[in-house]
Image (cartoon, rainbow, N blue to C red; front, side, top):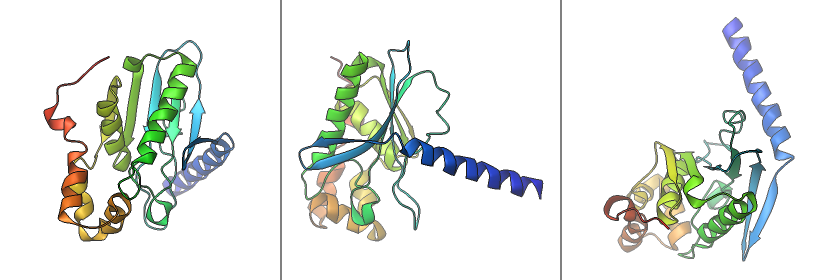
Length: 200
């Protein structure tokens, strides 16, 4: 009985906190991409944590993750929402029809915030789970950020989205469903396996 009530109160507090956090939501426009994000700045820190969203569950909308969990961290935090794709549930922070304009906008936003805060690239850490985990690894590797923290990421994205129930998302990102597009999408993160880490 008490456990049930405690869980109900916790869920209510999370909802209230998320509603409150949304009051601070901002928008970043880059070309045809309009990114929503939250930025929580901390003084006396030269580190930036970038948090990517997981794929929402059935009947849920895209939402920010780990806002409550990370609220006491003594580092600046940038939460980036991925509300693109079918039913606005996300497009893995990449793009549509092989135009990776979402990826470009995400990178530009991170760089804008990084420069504003005076943070070195090596002090940027990307973070996420599931879809967000893929994005954390992808952006850290592709754009030479300091580190990534990733939980249960879909690494071989082309293979994962080629599974029948995920194919609408593959079609959205790559323009059509084909073996060639499956391979092309999988190659986008081949650097994770084969490339030596480059640093600026």
